[in-house]
Length: 222
Image 1 (tube, rainbow, N blue to C red):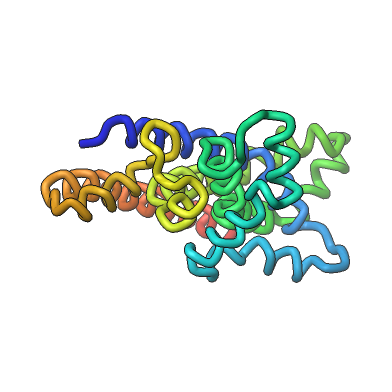
Image 2 (spheres, rainbow, N blue to C red):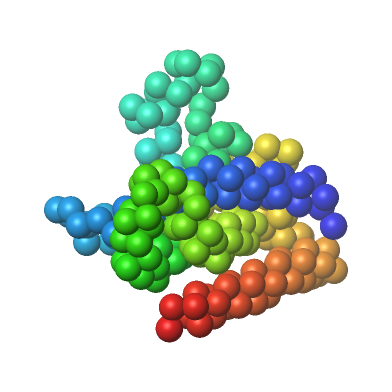
């Protein structure tokens, strides 16, 4: 078992989920209740990581983060090291790849809240901010938890984008998914099998939680 790769994956997954959750709340709420030009395009853009092959997405991110790109050049100028093949680049890539896993469950949770509930809160004298904290967030919490779980679990198992952007540097960008690949390449079936079993357990627990939370939203507003 490669505990260094496992701990790095945990750190990456936790950081990605922590960053995406508040942004997912803002984006999910806006997409659920607001109407604006280009809303369908925005939703399609957010869903791109779900349909693009990881190698394709990883290639475009590699180009976008490279030293020859404006983003990569600015990053290297101010930090002194390249964005690609670094934990920072890996975190930024993970953020972009996991957008749909964070936004979509939250969007569905907010969309499931009946408009009458919001109107009753306003009539009762609650401000929009108070209504958000005291009414909307408590009702949408299953979607928030589902978004956190999905983002965390998907980050733990992501391979293609991590390999393209991070390169598998030990202690820096070598996640558990890369470690499994390396063990399989060296015909270490026992090591690869142990780590694969751990990721399988993560995936099963995550799916079970998400299914249960989705069911709660459906029963509450069905």
